[in-house]
Amino acid sequence: MSLNYGDISGYDFENSATIRPPAAADLVNYKVLLFVDSRDRDITAYPSPSSYDVVISNPLANVASCRMLSSEILLRRENVSIGSNSATSRIASSGTTMTVSLPPGMYSATEICAALGDVGVIATYDAETRRFAFTSTEPLTLDLTSSDSMWPVLGLSQSTFLISPPPLTLKSTSPAELDGRALYCAMNIDGFKSVRSECNEVDDAFAVIDARFDRVDADQPALANKHFNPAIAHLARLRVSFNDRFGNPYPFPVKDHHYMLEFTCIKNKRFAH
Image 1 (tube, rainbow, N blue to C red):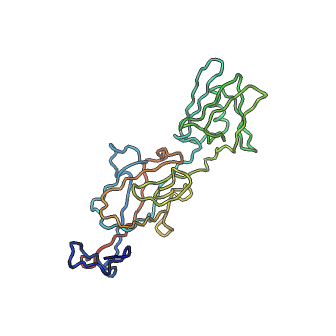
Image 2 (tube, rainbow, N blue to C red):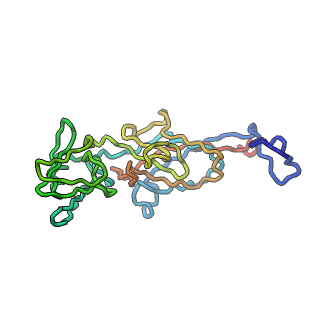
């Protein structure tokens, strides 16, 4: 017997072990709301609200879609984060290595310049161009290749740079990110891939949380809406994580957050109540 893909009209269900699937007219959708508060997580297993599991006490069957109805996920306003807070230098003549690490927070240009002084770099800042200039008293290499280096706030690339005494001066290649404008994080739920992006750390996320909209009410457009085809047969646990744009766990300014998820499930009318 030859059948087109998806065409079961000619299949002999009566004389086979295959159960005839219900007709579309026999299916009904119903909604389930799930409120998640990160304070309810297992603190021992998940000390940070940037990653945790959500156990669904009454598992869901045949989940066709999920969307975020409302949320309050407060993001921190900072220009130095855990993923971009260090700088290392090596003095050419002696090979001496020096490293400075700043706690996450908002820093002025003056404070950034003072921190670089701890690794032998003399830095100045031009507020008009929003760029730094770097010199030193002796030749050294500024290493910003580590995964937690502060290259974004300095307006440099993730690379190494030769710093020399005047009149040689290294300048920022792009405006320094002192105002912390890149304020968002990726919200991931395993298997709930909804976002497409050229940024690898955001691509395949469930939602992108923007600091401008860190409080979303139910009457506003959903932050995320994921459809599943085929439907998820059994859903008993969600693995949730939040990452910054460098892929690091997001350092929330407050301990906790909450949000409401709406699941659409499919049920056969014969078993619906």
